[in-house]
Length: 369
Ligand SMILES: *Cc1c(COP(=O)(O)O)cnc(C)c1O
Image (cartoon, rainbow, N blue to C red; front, top):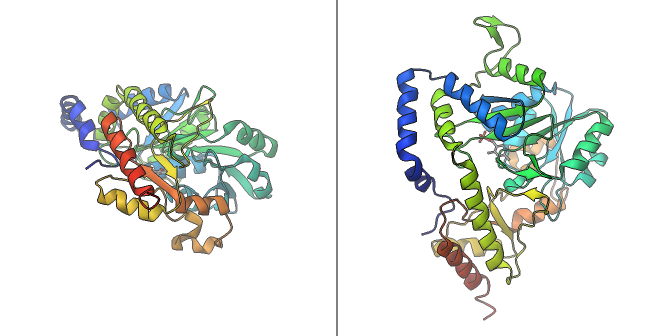
C-alpha cells in the first residue's frame, strides 16, 4: 500500500523534538497566541521574505481577514478561480463580496491573466490568484492588471509554502498572502492553522485586531472582530517544523522529478512549471482520459491516488446561487474530469514512485495490449 500522503512517517522523524515542544507549550499554559506563536510568525515572515506575518486558526480565516484588512466587503467583486478548494470562494463570501470566476491557463492550471480584464467591472476590488498544487500563478501580468485598475491582490498560497516566482516567495508579491497549516499541507500543524503575510504594516495591524475580537487592549474593542487566534501548541509544532521545511520541500521536488522522468514516455499531461517558478508539489497531478476507471484500479492495486478536485466550485450545489452553469469555464470543467493526483510526500521512496508509475502504465494500457 502506497498512501497519497504519510503524516506518520514525518512524525517519526521529528517525534522527540515535537513531543518535547508540545509538552513545553502545555506546561507554559500559553494556549492561545503567546511566545511560540510570535516566534513562528517572525520565522515564517522571514521565510516568505515579507516584513509581517500574523498567525490565525486556519487558512480560511487567513483569507477572510486578508480580504477584510484590504477593505473588501459587501457590494465588491473578487476575481478568482473555480479550480481550487472551496475555502477560496467561501472566504470571499464571508467578507460579503461576490466571487467572480475566470478560467485557468491550460499549461499551469492557475488563473489565466488573459481572462482577468474582461471580468473587471466597476465593483471589482480584488484579484485572488490560487497557487494550485504548489505552483505560483503568473504574478507579473496579474500585478500589472491590478495596478492599472487599482485592485488589491491577495495570494491564496495555502498549497504553496516555499514556492517562488522569478525568485520571489509565494505570499510576497501580492498585497497580502494567505497560508494554511492544515495537517496535510506542505507545512502542517497538529490541528488547524493559517497565516497572513504582508509588507504593509497597516494591513498587518488590521489582521492583528480582527483575529482577536478587535481588541486594541484587553476589553477595548475598536472594531468588530473574530476569534481567529492561533493555538500556542500549533505555534510550538510549527516552530519545530520550520527547521525541516526546506529539506522536505526539496524531497518533494525530487519525488516530482522522478515522476517527470518515468512519465516522460507515457502520453499523460504532466505538471509543466515554467523555468522561472519553484513548484513545491503539494499535489502531483496528471491529466488523462478514463480518469475515474484509472483511479479505481489504482486504488485496487494499493496506490493511494486521489482527485483534486472532482467538481469545480462553480458547479457545487452550495454555490448554485452564484448562477454559474456547465460550460461557463470549459478548461476548469475539462480538467476536473481529467486530474489524477499521485502520492507525493517527502518520505516517498524512489522504488515506490517506480511502483506507482508501473501500476499506472499497466492499468492505462491494459486494453491496448
Ligand atoms: C487548504 C486550502 C485552503 C483552506 O485552508 P484551511 O486551513 O483548511 O482553512 C484555502 N485555499 C486552498 C487553495 C487550500 O488548498
